[in-house]
Length: 421
Image (cartoon, rainbow, N blue to C red; front, side, top):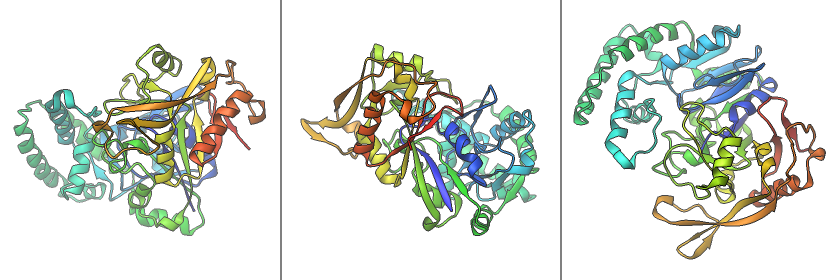
C-alpha cells in the first residue's frame, strides 16, 4: 500500500513538516522525483534542518528511506546532508537506500545550468543553478550517468566522455569558469556514495509492498511546476504530480491509495513565471514578513498572494487528491479581510480553467471576500476550538475543490497540526 504527499502550488507548501508528522505511521518514505532544488524544512527538537535530497523520514529510527530512480542526485549535496544528519546521531547506512537507476548530477551539469540561465538574460527561468535541468536533459537524451554506474571500475572513463560532450556545449556559451574545485569535491562525494546502500530500487520497494509494509511517496516542488501540467516554461524538469510516483519508483498505479495534497492558506512562488494572485503591495509584503517567506534552498524572497482556487482545483484534479492539508493558516490570523480567487477573467471572458499558456494572457483574478478571524490560532489544538470565521474559509475551499481539508497546520512545530475530524 502506497500513500503520497504532494505539493499543490508552486512548491514551498511546507511538505517537509507534513511528511515528518505522518512518517511514524509508515515503514518506508520514498522520494520519487526532483533534485537538490527541493528544500524540505524539518524541526528536530528545537533545531531547524533543511533536507534537499534525503527523504524526510530519516530522523525516524524505524523508518526506511529510499531515493528513487526519478530523482536526480547531487552526490556533493547528499554527502553534506548525511554529515548533518549524522550530527543528530542518525546512521544513514542503516536507514537510507538509493536506487541504482537514480541519475547523477555532475559538475558540468551545474556549469551548463549557469551558462544557459545567463544566456537567457531577462527571459531567465529562475533556475536554482544546481544542474537539475541539464541532468534531466541527459536522462531523456540517454547520456546520463546513474548511481549504479559508480560500482563499475570504468566510471571515471564514462564521466570523462560525458564531460567532453558538456564542454563542447559550454564552448557555445563562451563559458570559461574553472570547475576543477567542483570536480575534486564531486569525486570525494562519489567515494562516500559508494559506502551507502545502493539497491535495485524497483525490486526493493515492491518487496516492501509485498511484505505488507506501508510506503509514503514524498514529492518535491509543487504541481504547478510540473513539466507537463505546470506554468510552462517556468517549471521544473520532472513530473511533480502523482503520475511521477509510478515512473519515479517503479510501482504500479493500483498500489496507490491516498494522495495527500499540501496547500498553503495563501499562495507563494519563487523565481520567474505567472502568478495570477500575486500581491505587489503592502499586503503581499506583510504576508512575506509574517510567513518568513524566503526560499529554504536559495534564501530568495518568495512572491506572495492570496490563495488561487482555480489553480488549486486544477492540481487536485490532475493528482487525484483524496485529502487536503492546509499549512500556515496561522499567518492569516493578522488580517481583517481575506480574498480568494474563484475564477480568472481572460480577454473579457470568465473561466474556472487554467489556460494552456498563462504567459500568453493577461489574467485578471476574480475575488470572493471573507472576514478574517483576527485572533491567535497558533495555540489551538482542536478543530472545534477554531474560530467560526476560519471554519467558513476552510469550508469554502472544501466545497470549491471537492476535496476535504483533513488537517490544518497552525505553526512550524510538529505538534501544531489540527485534524478536522
